[in-house]
Image 1 (cartoon, one colour):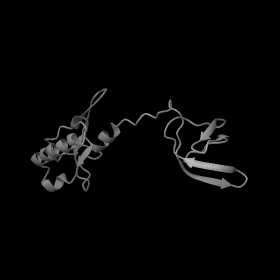
Image 2 (cartoon, helix red, strand yellow; image 1 turned 180 degrees about the vertical axis):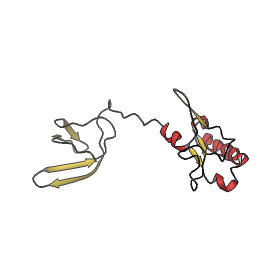
Image 3 (cartoon, one colour; image 1 turned 30 degrees about the horizontal axis):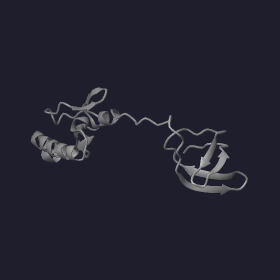
Image 4 (cartoon, one colour; image 1 turned 90 degrees about the vertical axis):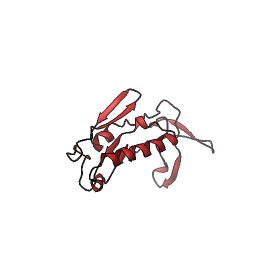
Length: 145
């Protein structure tokens, strides 16, 4: 999503909007993305135009359109563009990968490894092995924050 802000300072100039789309699209293409998959939304963050509701200040603006694998998505506002983003699929079918951020030794509870699950799943009762040490243990409980 490209939100073109401060459109109120250009008096909602369509020519300036198209110029920014042209320049940004060439940059997006240069870095390896498809410009047709990007929504361009003219906004005024200061006034709130085209953020949550369509603005009457740009009658020339017909809305954004972006192409994804499953088809075309359209909308008018920045909120609609944000809502159109599909969350990434979690790779639950892959082996467990949990890079450790920290390890706490808590009296009466035991050793508590802390990290973010990148792939796979973890459940109480599972037997896991920590690399590179090769330490194997059973998961007693899981907390998510």
